Length: 243
Image (cartoon, rainbow, N blue to C red; front, side, top):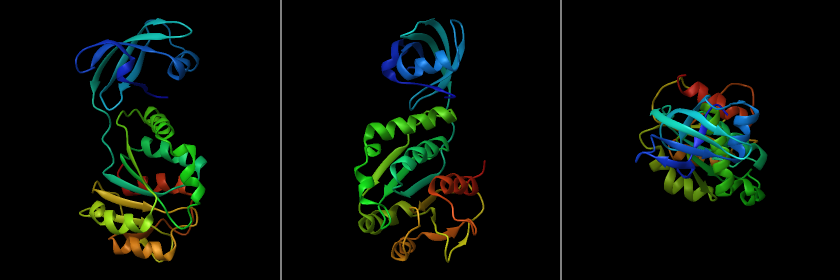
């Protein structure tokens, strides 16, 4: 946790825009401050308000069950990636890690979509509850010093999504589908708005690739090595966007 993420209901008192005030923390964040950062009264920590500014918090009181800080927020969060990511729903354990990675790398628009090789049971996983998705996104934001919560959209039907929604999403963007076969080499990094589709373990089937191509997405590859989804996503983002 490189950033203590704050929420509006943490504030005991505040300015009208929450840019300064007093917060009270308990639970997981308190445990991290006590056990990892080993802060004491007077220590200054890096903090940020969810969907707001980043700044510092000075510890004013600390106990086993709560901590108070005076916070001052002055800095904008990092710029988001100009990306809409379409991700065939991974298996639940991998989904947790991938959500955290996406949030940490600046993805703000994420569509979890169906595919022939996505097991139907994945859609009933507790990892897909709003609470679990939020928890994993928060872990990613805390890792990368960001405060802006990504939007996650669930699309359980592949064909209606690709035919009815995707053309508009991909319009006027660099539209790509990561596919290891009969594809062009991954293009160079750019700040251009991008739509990127990443398939499940085993990849999209030919029918799905054809549908994605018809919606305007160009097939690209990363070379001869076949990567797991949780590895392919950060590699693709690092290749497609400048550091």
